[in-house]
Length: 285
Image (cartoon, rainbow, N blue to C red; front, side, top):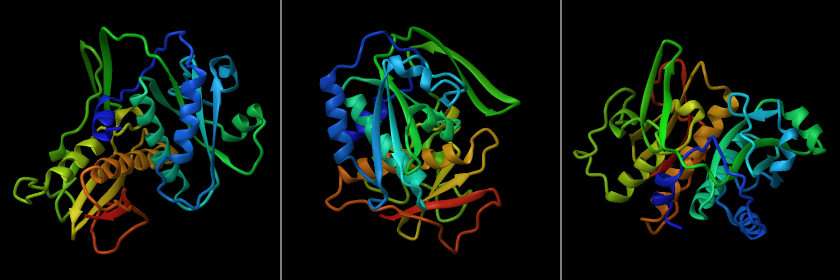
């Protein structure tokens, strides 16, 4: 799989056709899960695939702005609760979604609204939490599409265009240099094509309501991921988002370098950030 192409091709689909997902593709996803990339390998995880007929068990417990979209299938990622488990779940789930994209499947992240109720409805024990839910199948063809780009309650763009629309921030907005707010001159820094492609892939990562409440610092030979407080994104979704960003970045960079990218979860000293920002991970470049 070409991660760069998959990251760019992936889009969140809100309407699905009735076409079922074949048993062969579900088996392929089960194999992908066993082999997928992990941010924190010692966190125990499991996967469940539900058919669309089981959608009622998700109602009120998981969704996107309260909707489950009546998809043909749903992937649930269960995780042991340890430090970094949400970032790890986001990392793994994004890897699964990119594999779905490569298989010709469409998907949409859903928010877990009530984990205890969801586990009770699905008869899942208390050993693991439902950390991530993804609706997937075959999306309906999008023709004329109106989307909201929500920056705040009072700052909303309504944009209509042909085809799929998912506004993304530019690299100039997303990447800072060696200090917060200092725009990184990516040409002057002489970054290689692999790093540039990895940064582009990070900018494609899905985030709740497409808010993209994160930034990357390129400082001291590291890529440093900063989570920004966002009034419209809960802590669970924010950390899942960060995991997806780290996966896109690492997977694309690893395709272009002979050594693996290893993200460390946690903060770093020596960087002045706004009070509503937090370093959640970093990796050596």
